[in-house]
Image (cartoon, rainbow, N blue to C red; front, top):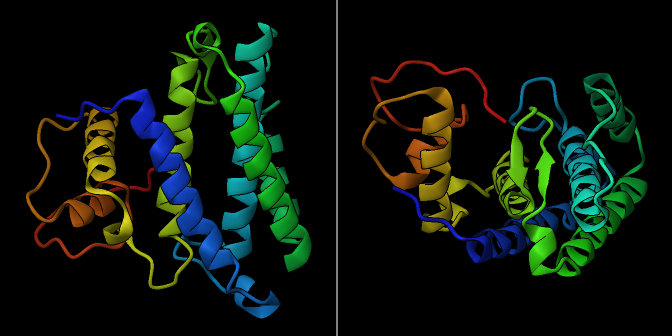
Length: 208
């Protein structure tokens, strides 16, 4: 059973962001346009999604800081359009957006007070959660998508305590009473609907 803390989630955001941006720094225009491991998405799509997610979670941080209701996205259509538009940007522009959104989200979270972290906000899925969940939402994005870029970075590069928390989270959301045995990284990849090495398990639809 995962017992993740707010501090854990903040550390995982830092770890996942470093993994993600280190890979991006190695890509040229052609490499960035290559397919990711996500069906129908190039690496640029993944980058645009991660950048847009930082902006969207920044809206929740603003909500927590000011009390002004600020949804992550105005609509699902807007979210998808932002990703598609972002994926058409040049590599330099897309990288600048990603780096700026990462910096702004980090600075905004660092400025929240203890009381503001306890403010209730609403996720894109309609769940009402305390703002302390925002780092966990971001950690999932940067860590999982760091393994989606189609390089040599995989779930095995993610911290074991993060993987344990992720397995617990997905297990609950998928409504599974139990999960298959195996290495943490492979079980987490399987539950997340990513490539894995587990045998004799049912196919699962995508998650996140």
